[in-house]
Image (cartoon, rainbow, N blue to C red):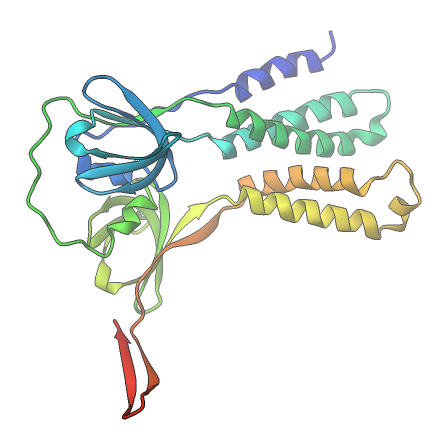
Length: 305
């Protein structure tokens, strides 16, 4: 039996859809730190009926989702369980690229024609990244992030909204984020606590707290798979079109080079993180505009702070 036969079953097992476990919360106000806007969520009411859709809005008293039948609202008293479905695209891409490169190494380097050893790893690694991305999209597993164990709690006292309320739906607990304060200093760490006007990070130097009035911007770490695929496809397509050896070779296709580049870009995007701004404090500013009428002339001033 060829060595490749041992690699393929492992690839299929690693790329198989799987669900991840996460600690669920029992109070509705904690839910924003477990889900993000745009997530696919499943809502279960006290009767056991479920509705699935994309999260549009979430407040301490209400959750709004866009379902196949239109927009639906659920109050905290009518929600027994919330589950979120997030396909692990990055994990699928990394596993697929690794398995593909391993198969390429075994098939190309152990065969009689070893001159294509490096090419086989490169090509099959790129193909594996694309296969891993497709396999991750098949993952229909959902993680329960909220479950009410008793009777619905009475609504608490109303509080005034805080500057960080919207941020809770852009990041989750344990996310890696970067905080820029008013002085321009940047601190990176793991998010451990977030309220309407304060956040706490666990950094290498210990725990640090930031008040909203001293925060200029917040960035969250992400992996730009789509951007990486587009850049990779563009670079290899341009290289194939510009290379004289490729233009004179009937077996060299810019389209194929672009497809390989997209797979390589996926793998690179899954490996190289990027901070994306998810919160920006309002910058104080003033604008002035002249106002004319038949009987008067004036200036309209607008102040934002």
